[in-house]
Length: 267
Image (cartoon, rainbow, N blue to C red):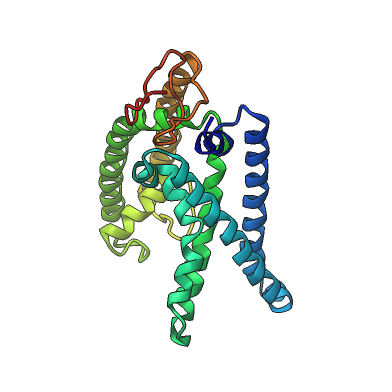
Protein backbone atom coordinates (compact mmCIF):
# COMPACT_ATOMS: atom_id res chain seq x y z
CA UNK A 1 0.00 0.00 0.00
CA UNK A 2 1.47 3.36 -1.07
CA UNK A 3 1.70 6.29 1.34
CA UNK A 4 -0.97 8.15 -0.63
CA UNK A 5 -3.38 5.24 -0.32
CA UNK A 6 -2.66 4.93 3.38
CA UNK A 7 -3.14 8.69 3.88
CA UNK A 8 -6.38 8.58 1.85
CA UNK A 9 -7.79 5.89 4.14
CA UNK A 10 -6.91 7.93 7.22
CA UNK A 11 -8.41 11.19 5.93
CA UNK A 12 -11.45 9.98 3.99
CA UNK A 13 -12.37 6.65 5.56
CA UNK A 14 -13.91 6.21 9.01
CA UNK A 15 -13.75 2.42 9.26
CA UNK A 16 -10.13 2.15 10.40
CA UNK A 17 -8.79 3.03 13.83
CA UNK A 18 -6.55 5.72 12.36
CA UNK A 19 -9.48 7.14 10.37
CA UNK A 20 -11.65 7.33 13.48
CA UNK A 21 -8.88 9.08 15.40
CA UNK A 22 -8.42 11.58 12.57
CA UNK A 23 -12.16 12.31 12.47
CA UNK A 24 -12.26 12.74 16.25
CA UNK A 25 -9.32 15.16 16.16
CA UNK A 26 -10.94 17.10 13.32
CA UNK A 27 -14.24 17.26 15.18
CA UNK A 28 -12.55 18.64 18.30
CA UNK A 29 -10.67 21.20 16.19
CA UNK A 30 -13.88 22.38 14.53
CA UNK A 31 -15.60 22.84 17.90
CA UNK A 32 -12.60 24.77 19.27
CA UNK A 33 -12.48 27.00 16.19
CA UNK A 34 -16.18 27.82 16.50
CA UNK A 35 -15.67 28.64 20.18
CA UNK A 36 -12.84 31.03 19.25
CA UNK A 37 -15.04 32.79 16.70
CA UNK A 38 -17.82 33.23 19.27
CA UNK A 39 -15.45 34.45 21.99
CA UNK A 40 -13.97 37.04 19.62
CA UNK A 41 -17.42 38.53 19.14
CA UNK A 42 -17.70 39.22 22.89
CA UNK A 43 -16.14 42.66 23.59
CA UNK A 44 -15.13 41.91 27.19
CA UNK A 45 -13.45 38.62 26.29
CA UNK A 46 -11.79 40.05 23.18
CA UNK A 47 -10.42 43.00 25.16
CA UNK A 48 -8.83 40.73 27.77
CA UNK A 49 -7.74 37.77 25.65
CA UNK A 50 -7.59 39.28 22.16
CA UNK A 51 -3.96 38.34 21.51
CA UNK A 52 -4.44 34.76 22.65
CA UNK A 53 -7.53 34.39 20.48
CA UNK A 54 -5.68 35.71 17.43
CA UNK A 55 -2.82 33.27 17.99
CA UNK A 56 -5.28 30.41 18.46
CA UNK A 57 -7.06 31.38 15.26
CA UNK A 58 -3.88 31.30 13.20
CA UNK A 59 -2.86 27.94 14.65
CA UNK A 60 -6.30 26.51 13.83
CA UNK A 61 -6.23 28.04 10.35
CA UNK A 62 -2.80 26.52 9.77
CA UNK A 63 -4.06 23.06 10.77
CA UNK A 64 -7.14 23.39 8.55
CA UNK A 65 -4.87 24.51 5.69
CA UNK A 66 -2.70 21.42 6.09
CA UNK A 67 -5.82 19.24 6.14
CA UNK A 68 -7.16 20.88 2.97
CA UNK A 69 -3.84 20.48 1.13
CA UNK A 70 -3.61 16.83 2.19
CA UNK A 71 -7.13 16.15 0.88
CA UNK A 72 -6.18 17.65 -2.49
CA UNK A 73 -2.93 15.69 -2.47
CA UNK A 74 -4.35 12.21 -1.87
CA UNK A 75 -7.37 12.31 -4.23
CA UNK A 76 -6.70 11.44 -7.85
CA UNK A 77 -8.88 14.28 -9.15
CA UNK A 78 -8.15 17.25 -6.87
CA UNK A 79 -9.95 19.78 -9.09
CA UNK A 80 -13.17 17.76 -8.85
CA UNK A 81 -12.87 17.55 -5.07
CA UNK A 82 -12.15 21.29 -4.81
CA UNK A 83 -15.42 22.01 -6.67
CA UNK A 84 -17.45 19.57 -4.55
CA UNK A 85 -19.54 20.62 -1.56
CA UNK A 86 -17.00 19.41 0.98
CA UNK A 87 -14.14 20.97 -0.99
CA UNK A 88 -15.84 24.37 -0.96
CA UNK A 89 -16.58 24.03 2.76
CA UNK A 90 -12.93 23.18 3.44
CA UNK A 91 -11.84 26.25 1.49
CA UNK A 92 -14.33 28.50 3.28
CA UNK A 93 -12.95 27.33 6.60
CA UNK A 94 -9.51 28.83 5.88
CA UNK A 95 -10.05 31.58 3.28
CA UNK A 96 -11.48 34.36 5.52
CA UNK A 97 -8.42 34.47 7.77
CA UNK A 98 -6.03 34.83 4.83
CA UNK A 99 -8.26 37.36 3.06
CA UNK A 100 -8.19 39.59 6.13
CA UNK A 101 -4.46 40.13 5.49
CA UNK A 102 -5.25 41.87 2.20
CA UNK A 103 -6.96 44.77 3.98
CA UNK A 104 -4.39 46.41 6.27
CA UNK A 105 -5.83 49.95 6.00
CA UNK A 106 -7.85 51.17 8.98
CA UNK A 107 -10.92 52.07 6.91
CA UNK A 108 -11.20 48.43 5.86
CA UNK A 109 -11.59 47.20 9.46
CA UNK A 110 -15.31 46.54 8.98
CA UNK A 111 -14.56 44.41 5.92
CA UNK A 112 -11.97 42.45 7.89
CA UNK A 113 -14.50 41.76 10.62
CA UNK A 114 -17.07 40.59 8.08
CA UNK A 115 -14.53 38.26 6.49
CA UNK A 116 -13.54 36.83 9.84
CA UNK A 117 -17.16 36.19 10.70
CA UNK A 118 -17.31 33.96 7.62
CA UNK A 119 -15.28 31.46 9.63
CA UNK A 120 -18.59 30.32 11.08
CA UNK A 121 -18.89 28.30 7.85
CA UNK A 122 -16.59 25.85 9.58
CA UNK A 123 -19.70 24.48 11.20
CA UNK A 124 -20.51 23.00 7.77
CA UNK A 125 -17.45 20.80 8.16
CA UNK A 126 -19.48 18.89 10.74
CA UNK A 127 -21.37 17.39 7.80
CA UNK A 128 -18.34 15.11 7.36
CA UNK A 129 -19.57 13.28 10.45
CA UNK A 130 -23.25 12.94 9.54
CA UNK A 131 -23.66 9.54 7.93
CA UNK A 132 -27.28 10.28 6.98
CA UNK A 133 -26.30 13.55 5.31
CA UNK A 134 -26.38 12.06 1.81
CA UNK A 135 -29.95 10.84 2.26
CA UNK A 136 -31.07 14.24 3.53
CA UNK A 137 -29.44 16.04 0.61
CA UNK A 138 -31.00 13.65 -1.91
CA UNK A 139 -34.41 14.07 -0.28
CA UNK A 140 -34.13 17.85 -0.47
CA UNK A 141 -33.10 17.67 -4.12
CA UNK A 142 -36.02 15.39 -4.93
CA UNK A 143 -38.40 17.78 -3.14
CA UNK A 144 -36.98 20.97 -4.65
CA UNK A 145 -39.31 21.18 -7.68
CA UNK A 146 -42.50 20.53 -5.72
CA UNK A 147 -41.48 22.90 -2.93
CA UNK A 148 -40.62 25.54 -5.53
CA UNK A 149 -44.10 25.24 -7.06
CA UNK A 150 -45.64 25.34 -3.59
CA UNK A 151 -43.71 28.51 -2.66
CA UNK A 152 -44.81 30.13 -5.91
CA UNK A 153 -48.40 29.35 -4.94
CA UNK A 154 -47.86 30.85 -1.47
CA UNK A 155 -46.37 34.00 -3.01
CA UNK A 156 -49.34 34.31 -5.36
CA UNK A 157 -51.78 33.75 -2.49
CA UNK A 158 -49.97 36.34 -0.36
CA UNK A 159 -50.21 38.88 -3.18
CA UNK A 160 -53.95 38.30 -3.51
CA UNK A 161 -54.57 38.42 0.24
CA UNK A 162 -52.33 41.45 0.63
CA UNK A 163 -54.28 43.29 -2.05
CA UNK A 164 -57.60 42.38 -0.42
CA UNK A 165 -56.49 43.57 3.03
CA UNK A 166 -55.16 46.77 1.47
CA UNK A 167 -58.54 47.52 -0.10
CA UNK A 168 -60.32 46.78 3.20
CA UNK A 169 -57.96 48.57 5.61
CA UNK A 170 -56.38 51.38 3.59
CA UNK A 171 -58.91 54.09 4.42
CA UNK A 172 -59.19 53.27 8.12
CA UNK A 173 -55.69 52.02 8.98
CA UNK A 174 -52.50 53.97 8.07
CA UNK A 175 -50.38 50.83 8.67
CA UNK A 176 -51.65 49.40 5.39
CA UNK A 177 -50.26 52.29 3.38
CA UNK A 178 -49.42 50.33 0.21
CA UNK A 179 -49.93 46.96 -1.45
CA UNK A 180 -46.30 45.85 -0.82
CA UNK A 181 -46.74 46.70 2.89
CA UNK A 182 -49.98 44.70 2.90
CA UNK A 183 -48.28 41.76 1.15
CA UNK A 184 -45.61 41.83 3.87
CA UNK A 185 -48.39 41.54 6.47
CA UNK A 186 -49.95 38.65 4.53
CA UNK A 187 -46.63 36.76 4.40
CA UNK A 188 -45.96 37.32 8.12
CA UNK A 189 -49.48 36.15 8.99
CA UNK A 190 -49.76 33.20 6.61
CA UNK A 191 -46.44 31.80 7.87
CA UNK A 192 -47.75 32.14 11.47
CA UNK A 193 -44.79 34.36 12.41
CA UNK A 194 -47.05 37.16 13.61
CA UNK A 195 -44.73 40.06 14.45
CA UNK A 196 -47.71 42.20 15.38
CA UNK A 197 -46.18 45.40 13.97
CA UNK A 198 -49.14 45.67 11.53
CA UNK A 199 -52.65 44.52 12.36
CA UNK A 200 -56.15 45.17 10.97
CA UNK A 201 -58.61 47.31 12.89
CA UNK A 202 -61.82 46.97 10.89
CA UNK A 203 -64.28 44.12 11.33
CA UNK A 204 -63.89 42.95 7.74
CA UNK A 205 -60.10 43.19 8.04
CA UNK A 206 -60.16 41.01 11.14
CA UNK A 207 -62.29 38.46 9.29
CA UNK A 208 -59.75 38.38 6.45
CA UNK A 209 -56.94 38.01 9.01
CA UNK A 210 -58.74 35.08 10.63
CA UNK A 211 -58.99 33.31 7.28
CA UNK A 212 -55.29 33.95 6.60
CA UNK A 213 -54.32 32.56 10.01
CA UNK A 214 -56.29 29.37 9.45
CA UNK A 215 -54.75 28.99 5.99
CA UNK A 216 -51.33 29.30 7.59
CA UNK A 217 -51.73 26.09 9.59
CA UNK A 218 -52.68 24.14 6.48
CA UNK A 219 -49.89 25.66 4.39
CA UNK A 220 -47.11 24.86 6.88
CA UNK A 221 -47.97 21.14 6.75
CA UNK A 222 -47.50 20.88 2.96
CA UNK A 223 -43.68 21.29 2.63
CA UNK A 224 -43.19 19.18 5.75
CA UNK A 225 -45.16 16.35 4.16
CA UNK A 226 -43.28 16.63 0.86
CA UNK A 227 -39.86 16.40 2.50
CA UNK A 228 -40.99 13.64 4.90
CA UNK A 229 -42.13 11.43 2.01
CA UNK A 230 -38.80 11.86 0.23
CA UNK A 231 -36.85 11.20 3.43
CA UNK A 232 -38.76 7.96 4.01
CA UNK A 233 -37.93 6.91 0.44
CA UNK A 234 -34.24 7.62 0.91
CA UNK A 235 -33.86 5.93 4.28
CA UNK A 236 -36.06 3.04 3.21
CA UNK A 237 -33.56 2.07 0.54
CA UNK A 238 -30.70 -0.34 1.13
CA UNK A 239 -27.76 0.99 3.08
CA UNK A 240 -25.10 3.03 1.37
CA UNK A 241 -21.39 2.42 1.58
CA UNK A 242 -19.29 4.74 3.72
CA UNK A 243 -16.36 4.08 1.37
CA UNK A 244 -15.10 7.25 -0.27
CA UNK A 245 -14.14 7.47 -3.93
CA UNK A 246 -10.33 7.65 -4.21
CA UNK A 247 -10.67 10.14 -7.08
CA UNK A 248 -13.21 12.73 -5.92
CA UNK A 249 -13.78 11.82 -2.26
CA UNK A 250 -17.58 11.39 -2.50
CA UNK A 251 -19.43 8.86 -0.34
CA UNK A 252 -22.90 7.32 -0.48
CA UNK A 253 -22.39 4.57 -3.06
CA UNK A 254 -24.61 1.49 -3.29
CA UNK A 255 -23.21 -1.70 -1.70
CA UNK A 256 -22.81 -3.37 -5.11
CA UNK A 257 -21.29 -0.28 -6.80
CA UNK A 258 -18.04 -0.86 -8.66
CA UNK A 259 -17.64 2.68 -9.94
CA UNK A 260 -18.21 6.09 -8.40
CA UNK A 261 -21.56 7.54 -9.48
CA UNK A 262 -20.13 11.05 -9.32
CA UNK A 263 -16.94 10.76 -11.38
CA UNK A 264 -16.95 7.18 -12.75
CA UNK A 265 -13.68 6.15 -11.08
CA UNK A 266 -13.30 2.51 -9.99
CA UNK A 267 -14.02 1.94 -6.31
